[in-house]
Length: 241
Image (cartoon, rainbow, N blue to C red; front, side):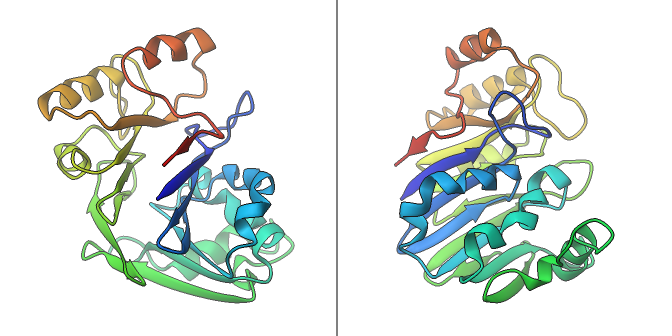
């Protein structure tokens, strides 16, 4: 398994760091976790893209900083079979509804429903789903709207747009790479995580595979260096394998 960070910022891009998007190569599948504007960094990885004819995109929820990259998919995957997985009922109306609203003709020239050579939409719930022989587990998180933690083949656990909850640390402690958001230093804001609470849970569950993503875009370079002394922080372009 190889994971490339395309976008590691929370809620807005700054200082060459874009919003949530992660490229995964695993068992012959090309998988993208979230589709923030980090998707635009794919132009740096055309040598990877040319090895595939299908791309599988997993959305954790429909906040704009996590799905805005949907608008740019045809720049990279016009001739691919594109498979998009996202939460549906009882949490949201449907993927088709959300994506068509995002790219209504008043806002964008072409509907997201015209993405790729063939587009397949799959709605998931807490029972999870499969991408071929890749198992994807789903857990409900604590956020302002419904958001979901994603576990891929018990090797990656991805938890963004969530407060610090035990479920994510139970699922994340035994995987190879546990990616968790961090938006504040001391105090949790509604539906988001603080470094203080992450460190407390990390120590409680003896987690040693934790990487911070969806980081606060207002943090200075000095603040990031201080945080890195406690927990690794992923930056755009970083690779885990």
